[in-house]
Image (tube, rainbow over all chains, first blue to last red; front, side):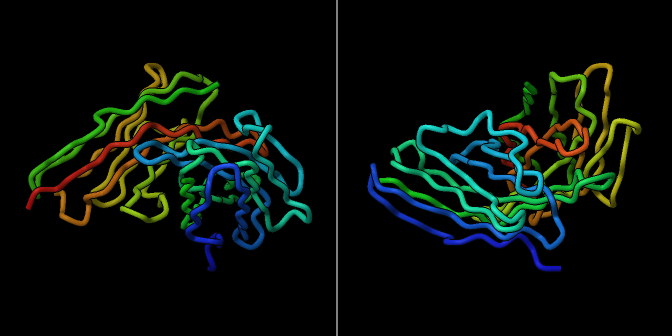
Length: 115
Length: 114
């Protein structure tokens, strides 16, 4: 079974620039998550989609971060303008819905460095 | 919202000894508790999970215990091996339909000393 795919794997940008990350979840997974993992910390949920609807975006800094999942499959996470403190790994994850839906599978992550 | 605390932040054990990592959570609605292992530069990978209808689950050298009354759960690794060295994260989640949001602990860096 193919895993969660993310791109790009690495990105270096200057502060105030913009960046976008792409995620393709495991086939058939209705729920998609974006997590932010700052070095030395646990992942923190930014946004959760169920199909193409947002379930939870309470921790998404909406003044600079946006995410969409237009057709209920792939998703993009955008940061504009970036700040130094946005340097982190952005992990996309997916899960099935329903009884067995709790197992959450992560992608390899997109490493962002803001200089 | 949910708050998960994890201890210790670092742990070193001799190869062959046991390692125990403990987590507490705050939200009594949480009923799913997975443990993830993350090697340097890699994705978090699920190693074991437990749901609130059981108190203990074991998979070879790894076991997890859950005390819902006290709101804490623990990871036990026996007969540790060098490849067990990694960062381990606990997490907690409610499992209402469409809302399996994981809240993670801060991680434990486990080092196995050969």
